Amino acid sequence: MDKFSDEKLSIAVADLLKTLDLEQLEVNLFRGHSPQTGWQRVYGGLVISQALVAAMRTVEGRNPHSMHAYFLLGGDPKVPIIYDVERIRDGGSFTTRQVKAIQHGRPIFSMSVSFHNDEEMLSHQAKMPEVPQPESLISEQQVRERFGESMPEPVKAYYDRQRPIEMRPVDFGRYFGKKDPEGRFNVWIKAVAPLPDDPAIHQCVLAYASDMTLLDTALVPHGRTLFEPQFQGASLDHALWLHRPFRADEWLLYSQDAPNLNGSRGLSRGLIFRRDGTLVASVMQEGLVRLKRGESL
Image (tube, rainbow, N blue to C red):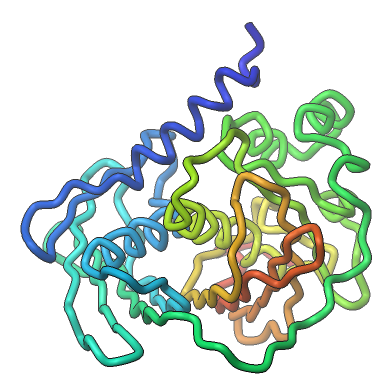
């Protein structure tokens, strides 16, 4: 059986859902685990999504609408992560939670989450870019088949991993040094297998996926990528706003750009749309993008 068969891809999603099903230790205390993938650090999107799960477990009747997070230390994938939730506020319209992720007795991550029920009001949104539909773009399997031998080794290794989220870049030339003069990067994303209907699961899966390509977008205007061995990158903070309902197992367009890169810090932002053009989320992140010691551009 092919290692990227539908059955194996479903297992990848099942494994993601398992990592999001945190163990409750006390009223406001939860424990999560990282998949043993051989990564040196915990993937930032995993900590974001698990922290969101922890916050949600302490709130009833309201949906999250914004998250603001700081990555304090690199996470150790070999040990559990403890999530400590502080109930900051339970107001008439808004609920606020502060989540601290702890490993080896030290905080590695901190996130504030605000919850609110939608209220009737005027509405508008940004327009979705005009891009090819995902079915017209090459799949990850086709990427491996067509470009496997010519891809840089770090890119090839990335595409050889079994992941719960499929990505279809609108312009795959990005990974071969092609520059975009406006610094834009559009990619379609979705879970590789169906998810349960619970909207909270789709929100947490989107939080997981929102960190996958954003930091790398800071190098798009230069035709470079964090896959190049002389670069190293790390997320410093991450903000996510949820605007409208969506399903994370249906195609979503993640439209990204990077308005600033200076002092080894890149600021990237993204808008996430349903394929019918509905804006469902906005994301911003500042990240460390630096040359490794002894390397040159």
